[in-house]
Length: 63
Length: 454
Image (tube, rainbow over all chains, first blue to last red; front, side, top):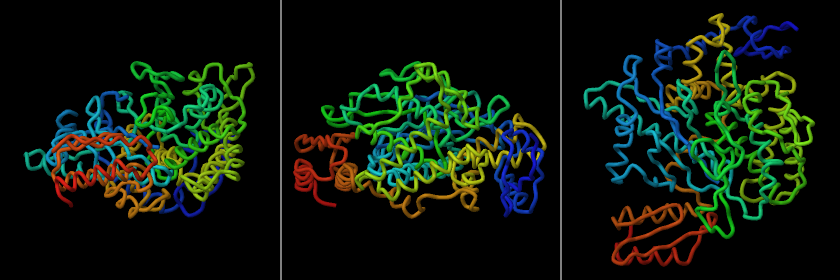
C-alpha cells in the first residue's frame, strides 16, 4: 500500500500516516517553515564531522 | 525504588577525541574528590555519585517512594553531572586543553559496547518466583514498546538500545551474560522482609513522560503481583529469543510462543497488563505514588498502545523517546533524501542523549515544545539540594549535612550511618521507607554533643 497522504512533520497540522512501511516516509514532502527552522537549529548544535563524532565515542561495557 | 544510571563520557576538540576515559573522568570528578576526598560519595540529596567499572560516571538515586519523585531525583543526577562537565571544561582550559566534555545518557557506544540504567524495586519475600516467568519476564521484554529510547542499527530503526545484547531470563549472577531480572537476597535493608529486584533491560530515557511510564507500568505490575491480582499467564518457551524481534517490529505484532505452543503478540502482552492495571487502579490504596499520577500514566500507556495499533505515532511523538527520536530522524532522512545508514543520522541518534541542556538535541526539542515534560525545573533543582522526605534518604541526608558541617569523621552507606569519634557509634536503618528512628535520634544527639551543631 502506498503513502496516501503527505506528512507535515513539524508543521502546524498533523496528518495520519496510513502506511506501516517506514521507508515510505521518505516519499513525503516536508511542508512548512516550522520543520526547516527546527532542522536548521538542530544542525547548528551538531559538530560538522558527523562520522568522527560518532566513531570517537567508545566506552568500555558496563554492567 | 531507585534508579542507577551509567553515563557515556567523552571529550572532543575539533571533532576529535581528546584524552582517554580515565583521564577525562579524573577531570570530571576533581571537584568531588577535592570536596570529599573520594570519587565515590553520597551527595547532599542522599544519592550516590561514583565512577564505575570502565570509567563510567554513575549516579544512583536516593530511595524514592513515588514515580514522580523518582523522576526528579533521576534528573537531579543529570544536572549534577552536567555541572561537573562544565567545571571539567574549565579545568581542562586552565591546563591548556580546549575541549568540549560530553556526557551521554544512552546505552551503546560506536562499537556496540553496552552500559545501562538499572531499576531497583523493593519486593516482599513472599512474591512468588513463578510470577516472574508468567508475567514479569513477558512484560519486561515487551516494555520496550512503551519506553525504548530508539536507535539506528544495521540500516533499521530499533525501538530499544538494550535489546541487542546477550540476555538471560533470571539469574543471580551478573558476570558474562546479563539477566533481565536479578533478585538479590543481599538487600540494603531487612532481608527477612524484603528482596531487591534489579532490572537491567531498560533503556536510559531522556523524556520525562517516557521515564515515568517505564517505572510506573512496572510498579503497577509489581503491586498487582504482590496483591495477588489474577493476571494472564504469558509464560514463554524462550523469552530471550524474542527481544530483538520485538525491537525491530514497530507494529508490535511479533508473535511470542507460549509454553503451550500458542502465540501472543508483543502488543497483546502490554494490552493485557494495561487492562489489569486499570482495574487495579480502582481498588488501589492511594499511597506511595498518588492514584492521580497513576491515572495519567495509564492514560499515556493506552495512547502508546493505540498509536502502535493504528501505526500513527502523532499522538505520542512528543512524549515517548523512540517516537520523538524517530520523528526527528525521519525529518532529516527526508531532507537529506537518504537511508538509515547516513552518518548524520547516527550523529543525531547519539547527540539526542547529550545531557547538556544548552546543546543536547533532546533538550532542544523539549525547549521548543516538541517534547513534553512531566515535572518542572524547579522541582529538579529542589531535588539536587535535598533528599526525598518520605524515605530513609531523609535521615541519611540530615546525618550527612550534620557530620559534614561539623567535620565529624563518619562512614555512610545505604543502610548504615556511623560516626567514628569519640567512640564509634553505628545506626542501621533497615526500613527504606522509615523516616523516623529512635536510634537515629540518639546518634544525632551524640554527634551534636561531641561535635557541635550546624
